[in-house]
Image 1 (cartoon, rainbow, N blue to C red):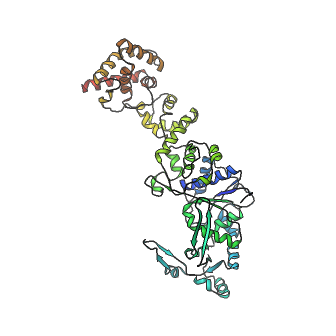
Image 2 (cartoon, rainbow, N blue to C red; image 1 turned 180 degrees about the horizontal axis):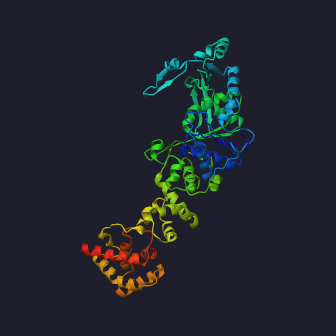
Image 3 (cartoon, rainbow, N blue to C red; image 1 turned 90 degrees about the vertical axis):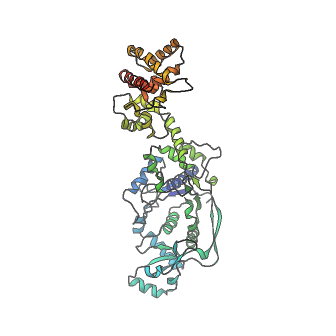
Length: 489
């Protein structure tokens, strides 16, 4: 590969939302290419027509656009090696042409076995309930005349790879090194199915070669298929690309990340209130980390720092808590207008009153990790919740229910006469009041914040909350707090 322009591809199947593992494959392929100044290709692998889902190609395009993974060639950007959709390549006869070439070389053969015969070849995998079909090369021994007769009769067939049964096959992976397997373990996999479509494995090899792919990035679940890939490359006399197998992604219980987790796809995470930039940053660290251990990185920084040789072999744990923390860091860095635009729908879900929503938004920006967190931080603005009078007790502030009741009673007439209801004016009033009474600021501010919010934790202090609530609502809530304390004493 030395001296060759680096070309990587992302080749998703249009079967639904983009799994985090697929996004990581796309991201790593993109980073390898951009780091080396090469080309990133999008290829749609829609040969499994039964699993194809309507609208899934749109999901792929939306996800790549949202994450900033721009491709140089693809279905809408012809770089001279298209089409970039496999079903279109089937219609053009690409795969059948190469499968027949292998048949001519003796590296593949027609198989006419019925489903009933194949069912009889099933054997159980030792120590499990799993059954596999190991093909016995029955049709390899058909004469050329017999094959032509069956083809002319219209008997359904598949084309199988002719793998050796003796010796070994070695392939190299840039992460896992050299891996050798006994050829007796290599089944004669199907290359062309009975519907004329290629299998995933065969189409991959043909397309990667024809599109000049130099580095193949994929999950390590494909490690076991790699010897068969290599044998195909060798059968054609093609140069083998560099393999880069990514480690498994597990949940926090070290089980394979599944759809049941609720956060296995990119769209799941966006719907849960995560930013695309966060997801990209987080996914980049599922199996790789930079030498300086920096954790918060933009896409440009990832391009600069990414070195696939430093990828881990060990499974990567999807740490949801870390993802939340990282998202909080990204939210804090957002410019306010962008944050407000994203926050507004969540704010409006719980606040229907005429309040200053921008001020509320500014309060929560540094306090949330994901956007849905906003609602629990601000719901008290809409309606004062029922709360326990014990919340007025604060040891550090040296407030008790009795001292809080007295403080609220004393401040209430002052507030009723107060005209300037801005944050600064209210704070100065409370500060002066506390000095006159020989109190600490917190001994008046704590009871006030409790009375106007009914919450232990709030996104702002008493005066900030009161400015937003307004005079009438603030006084009504303070009076309610006084009544609650009176009834509990």
